Amino acid sequence: MKQILLSTISLDAKGQDPLHRQLFLQLRNAILRGVLPAGTRLPSTRLMAKDLNVSRNTVLNAFDQLMAEGYLSSRAGSGTFISDQIPDELLSKEGTGSSTSPLERDFPLSHQAEDLKKSSDSKPYHNGPFSPGLPELEQFPFGDWARLLARHWRRPKREYLTGNPVGGSLELRKALSTYLAQTRAVKSDPEQILILSGSQQALHLVVKAFANPGDPILMEDPGYPGIRNTIIGAGATPVPIPVDDEGFSLEAAKAMNTNARLACTAPSHQYPLGPTMSLARRLDLLNWAKEENRFLLEDDYDSEYRYTGRPLSSLQGLDTDQRVLYVGSMSKVMFSGLRVGYLVVPPDLVDMFLALRRDMDGHSPVTVEPALADFISGGYLSGHIRKMRILYEKRQAVLLKLLQDNCGTELEVEPQEAGMHLVGFIRDPHLKDTAVEQLCRQDGLLLRALSTFYHGEHPKNGLIIGFAGTPVEQMPGLVKRLAQHIKTAREMT
Image (cartoon, rainbow, N blue to C red; front, side, top):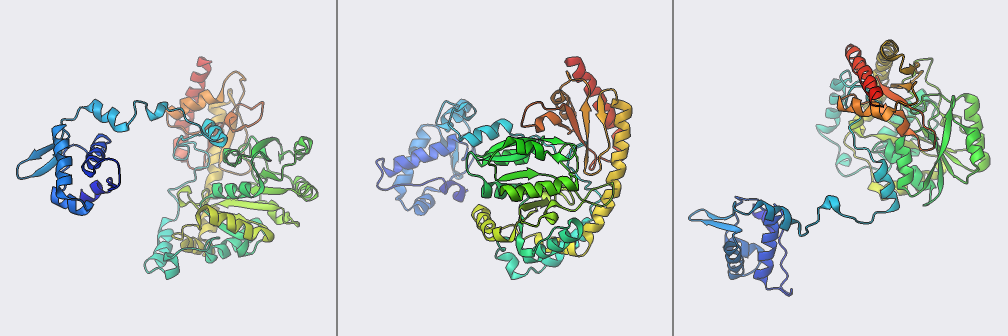
């Protein structure tokens, strides 16, 4: 208790108030703010005087005043305690130093903060039935993962304890370079890869590198809200580009005729609608970037889970002019709590991105990186992905049939060639997807309203329904509950 108490006290011998008055005011404030709750035993006056480097009389005078005003009580033979007789209204009002609740304060924020506050979403979308992007967690090979972690941390190397290279551990960058070349045809040296705390950090770095405040950045519409919020957070301007059957509409982007230096795309599996960009469109996009001196951010968030043929080669792998910045994550193929993402940058931009990363947080946590390098190099990751691909394909088929049978009159649902979710388009234009989402969330069903993923005009009404993390045996009951919520939302319209 002595350490807790004294950490709140700072006396100034040159201050206007006497030392005993300063001590009295600071102790009283600590009591009213709840830092020193009722029943707390205070150090003896001798001990407090010694630790504060003041005379004992200074402490005695402060204690006497606190006693007189009812903040302290003395128990013979036990010491001095914070009184339990202080009125609650005094604790709640005087302790704040203001009669205005922080929830009622009117204070200026930056334009970016105001815009982000409007679009903020703290709802728990990643840990419940139908949550898009939630992988199957029960069948992850935790035994192998624990063994790899133990191998490196039972007797850790010294370099693991003293930091990490700015770009991440070399072992993990080498493992990722080989893995991405084999599975996604990504062309990279290990030095081109930055290990980051999730894909969102990669988005922040890329936007920060290419946008000044007010600059336009092209993004898919509808698209991943994390990209939109990153653009807004950088003070730049998101420019929505419509999505057609092949994803990012290059024709629409050209018609915009903006001076945007960066376009953000998800060519292998557009989120949330799901189309895959054709080879012809990819080549046209790369040629446009080269001719217009633009760069492309490729968000490759879940392309490993493809159910028709092999996963398509990355846009980055087709790039001959070093125009693509490739973003990936371990959240969908392993689990989001790992907080590991990566960014592959062109060779001539490596030093600049390392400088940006150094300015952001120095380096990534080293704790899991050696084990993750072994997990990838040892084939554990590829094996897990193959197993999950089979499982997810089955779960998609079951969910699709249940939705068509139980909600077919309300939702238009088609199978997806890749990914971890289905999109059910609402047939009735008067039925709002946000109303269905709200009812479902209250019931623990964490699907998403499609309209909230649009930044431009004319959003479509629909539901984004995850299947990867929802067991087949639970789906019939869950779909019946969804059908009831749709019915209820219709009745409320």
